[in-house]
Image 1 (cartoon, rainbow, N blue to C red):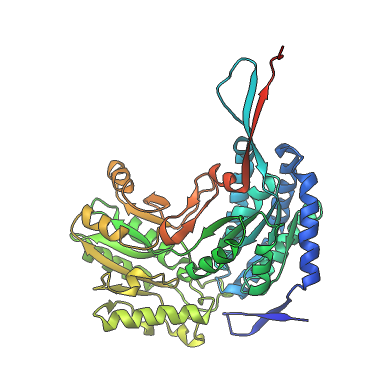
Image 2 (image 1 turned 90 degrees about the horizontal axis):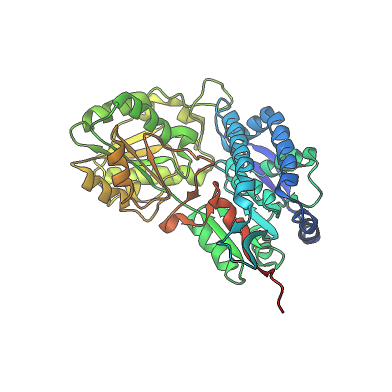
Length: 464
């Protein structure tokens, strides 16, 4: 019987063991999903919604357990973990509110003697493969709208956070959701590929690295199956000189270091107007020094370990390479002696004298590090923001909304923020450009990839 271990970044111990599902169990899950969806898709949206409402209540009741499990599985401070449950509930409620409007028939111009409309039809079974860094939030983006649209869902979660899948199952079971509509599988990479190849899977939603996205796309290309990919990010911020400096520094420090910088839409590079550059950097560094790195089970800790050693190595190597190329680090690691707790405990770091020849400004870091550059004007900031193979989110920090819109129209990104960052609004589309992937979740638009259009062209006049 194949098992895999969850190695906790808190102390390097084995937190839990999970069992990989067998071939026979995988077949049973696929078959039952295929069967369950047939009755489910005949229901009205209003008849599906009560199950999701009960699921939300059940998930909320698991907040304490979920929070502790998240901290042990991925190292997020216990003081922050409950926010993920709240955010998950917020997004689920948003999808509930949008469902009936988003899934209603699309009417076209009336013609006497005809009834014409476009119906949104469920795809069938949706296979969800989320990442570990926000394991509930990422998964819920697809799970709830997929079910509301009439699909069955099979969840294959990351090996770093497999207990998330089990908690989802607990909450759906308590909601009374009919059997087979939500199921999870613990799978090897090979079995994951085999499930994607199965003709009973009608859509695949993947969140992860660019390299992982290429692997998923290669397998999916063997069939004509729908595919949504949310991949990497190297999200920029542009700080103008008409700013409330304290407010912007506070939010950008949080945007860079929350969740130890392990956020697809976290701030990884900052461009600052040259006449306020030194004041901004000084304030940014002073606030960063106030972080408390340590045991994430300590309620006073607000910066925990990174989840994986490979992630820590990426950050360390990027910093070393940048320094060797002329960059300067502004945080003395000695200020964070808790780094002695283990390899995954990284002091937050701020780099200046950086440029776009360095990986620290071009490649995803996914850790507690940020580079800051000065720019002379809006055009230089725009050029640097767009000089990236990624495009998930970008932000501008200014009191001038007209400027924000003007620059935003030229930034290559999925979401453009003014005076905000590192946030998903369930009523707005969540998407990216370039190597960040393709497809869309959240908002009314997010329902489109989870349904197929079906046209009804009915001639109602009597033909003589």
